[in-house]
Every structure is written in C-alpha cells, then in structure tokens.
Image (cartoon, rainbow, N blue to C red; front, side, top):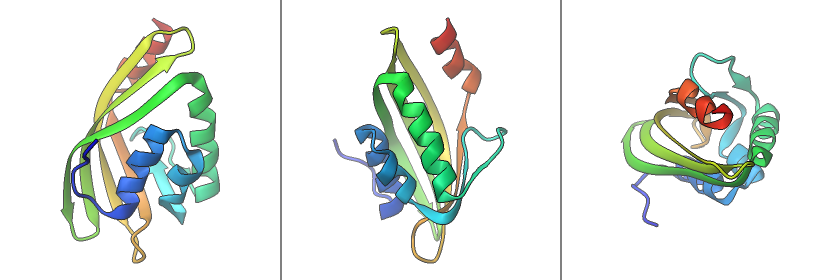
Length: 129
C-alpha cells in the first residue's frame, strides 16, 4: 500500500498500527511523548505508558487491522493526517472508524505529542452494539 508522504516517525506510527507492533508504535514517540487518544480523554504521558496503552488495546481485536493514512500535511514540525481505522472485534464484528491525528515532532523527529480526533462514541458503539 502506498502511504502519503510524511515524516519517518509518523509513517512508523501508521505502519506499526497495521502490523500490530506495540514496540514500534511506541518507539515512534519521544521518551517523554504525550498521546491524546482520543482528544478529551486523559493524556497518556511517556513512552512506557504509551506502550502499555497500545499493548492493552491490541488484544481486544482479532485482528487489529490498523490505521490507514489517507492524506498528510506537514508544516515544519507539525503534521496532520486523516485516516481510516479497521479491526475485527473478538466476537467477529467488524469495527470501522475514521479521524484526524495532529502530531508535533521534537528536534530529533520523534513524536512529541499526538492528538487523535475521532468520535469515540461511534467506535465504542460498534464494540458494545
């Protein structure tokens, strides 16, 4: 699959989501990175906490198909990416959602902060409905 052009850490974020690789996904963040998933929820701070969060989400799906970036726009150290997510719940139901992530990169090119904008109620309804 061809992804839109984006900085390496953001590309790693999306590729790792599709591979279900919690290690690579967390390593796209700076050691003190912050992940708002979704925006409005308490932020997840620090690479170890981000890794623990991702590792706790992935087993809830068989498989977690990941996030597919649709468009990416980069201005300096800021990146906005629209995406589509897909997974299969443990009961076999398909789960589909979409959103926009906004990233701020640090001086080394890793993700300092990621903000995920999506309708979590729509996502959750597919898991409980």
